[in-house]
Length: 205
Length: 94
Image (cartoon, rainbow over all chains, first blue to last red; front, side, top):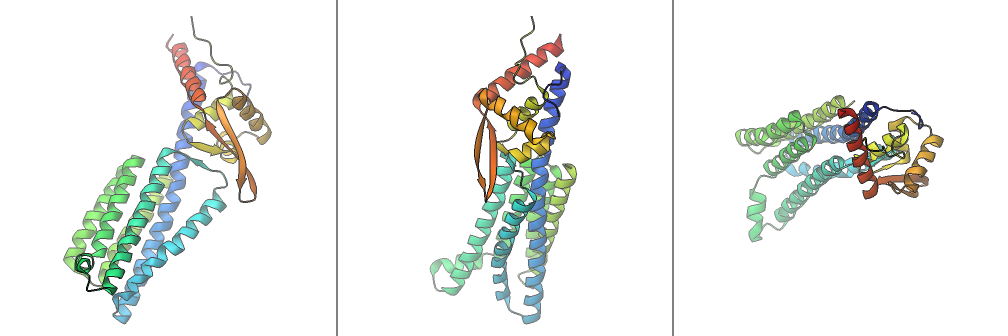
């Protein structure tokens, strides 16, 4: 690109439009990588917890979920530092990042409270917290986070995927009941999340 | 009578830089270079001109051990950009 090229009014407007469109696409495309990363991790951990729960018969393998952010956040940071030496942020990327960080904080807090109240079982709040289904709560939060991401990205595929994952998984959960097979709900959610990432990347490349 | 086009913005690379910064909160030098396809030397000169005009702010810092230059659009820059687009529209509509 040269700085002294004579431009007509139409060429200037075309340059502005092209630059803004490419820039917006690039920032959204980069976000797709994180959808893929967390989708793969969610799928992996759900299958791991399922396999261990099924083989031992103990539901305490659910505590492995706490390892997911411990693995995921360093990986996300590594991707950012290695592949994105060039950085730009806009409102959309900040909103998407905020949505999923909030989801992570809420999901981990819910899980931590469930573990805590399971340990101190005689507390009056324990019956409420432990009685509620953690899987159902987290999968609903997940669906909500994905749907809002779709709204922010103006992408109908993501909006629908979020709704189907949240509400659909909840329905499956109440049909199948609370056993190790509920992990497949998270497997489905992980696959949907990774697929969302691929859609975002493809649409914006 | 057509409005006069801002000479600071009526340059291919400077216009691309301002258009890019109008869509982000901030962007570092490497990102702007990638998106515009400009050479580092050329881009650096144009960024200095935009900064001298008060259209962008340039912050020099470090990302880890690497130097990092971050640019963002100022309110004056945004106003100039809006006026420039309005002027372009007038040219096209006549």
